Image (tube, rainbow, N blue to C red; front, side):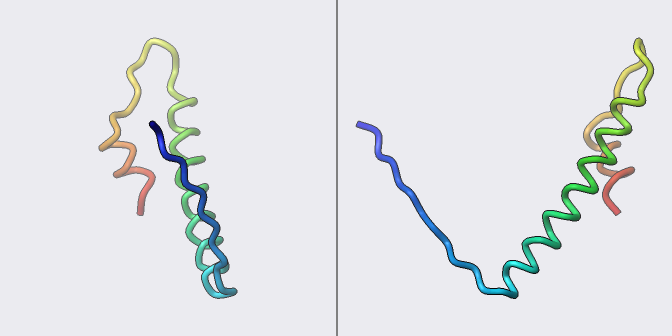
Length: 58
């Protein structure tokens, strides 16, 4: 039998601001990595995950 759980959180105002900041930074890094991948011409190999991290994460 599989169990299923539901949780609900009620963050404070400060936690909401901090979460928005973190997810905003994550979105920027994701978009930068996606732009690098999509700008790679066909036939060339993509950057490895380690190389993407070096380029995108500051």
